[in-house]
Image 1: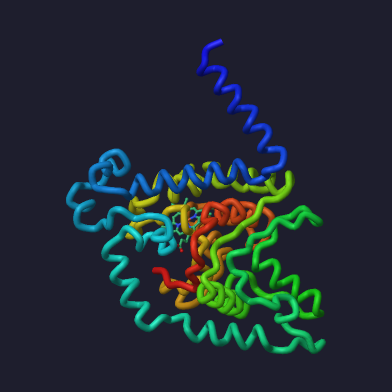
Image 2 (image 1 turned 180 degrees about the vertical axis):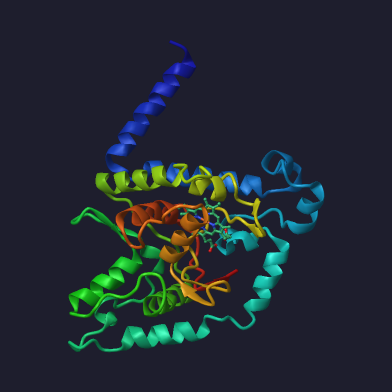
Length: 302
Ligand code: HEC
C-alpha cells in the first residue's frame, strides 16, 4: 500500500473517531473553509480576476476595500464596499436604533401581569451570541425570537410578531448588552440530532430554487462581493453578528427572520414562515458560520 493511501486511511479513521464525540467537527471544518475562502476572495486586487470575472478593473480598484479579515466581516457588504462604508459611518454618527435599545431595556424590565418579567427568563441579557440553540429535549432549533415568545407564553402573555416591533426592540437591547460585554457568536452543536439539524440547514442554504434557480449561497457565498441591482451582496461569514438591524428601506428595526423572508421574496419565491423549522435550521447553519466573531448589533443597513 502506498504511503499516501495509508495516511489517508488514517485520516478517515480520525474523522470517524471525531464524529463520535465531537458533534461540531463537520461544522467547524465548514466554518474554517468558509473563512479561508472569504479572506482569500477579498485579500487583494491580484486575485480579483478569479473571483470577480465580470467586474471591471476600474470598479475593483475604485469601489473595493481589500485585505479584510475575520471580524471585519461583521459589517457585511460595508466591509469591502468603499461607498457603502462611508455612508454607514455617516449614519452611525447618529444611529437610528438608539431609542429602540432604550425601549428594549424598558421592555426587559417591565412586569408581566403575573408580576414576573423577562429578567426571570434571562437573568443575563448579554445572550445575543448564544442563539440559535439546539434544544436536546424537544430536538428542535430555538432562535432568540422563538425563545422570547416562549418566555411570554410561559408567563401567560400573548406571543409577539416575529419580524419587528417589541420583539425586535428587546433583541436590540440584548444585542447591545452583548456587544458592550464583548460577547461573541457562540452557537453550540452538542448532540447527534443537533448535528443533523445543522446539516439540514446547510443543505437548504445550498439548494437552488425559484424561477431564477438561486440558492442562498449563489448570492452570499459565490455571489458575495458581486452586485445585484444596486446592492453589493454580503458574505455568509459575519451575517448574523449584528441583528436586529435598522434598515433604511424598512424605516425601522427588523429581526433576522424578517431579513430572510425578504431574501426569499426577492428571488420570486413564496417565503417560509418566520420562526418555523425551515428558517430556524437555516439560521442555525448561518449563525454557526459566524462562530467566534464579536457581536456587533444592533446595526444599520440599507
Ligand atoms: C438574489 C440574491 C440573494 C439570495 C438568493 C439571497 N439573498 Fe440574502 N441578501 C441579498 C441582498 C442583495 C442583501 C442586502 C445586501 C447585503 O447585505 O447582502 C441580502 C441580505 C441578507 C442578509 C443580511 C446581511 C446583513 O449584513 O445584514 C442575510 C442574513 C441574508 N441576506 C440571508 C440570506 C439567506 C439565508 C438566503 C437564503 C434563504 C438569502 N439571503 C438569499 C441577496 C440575496
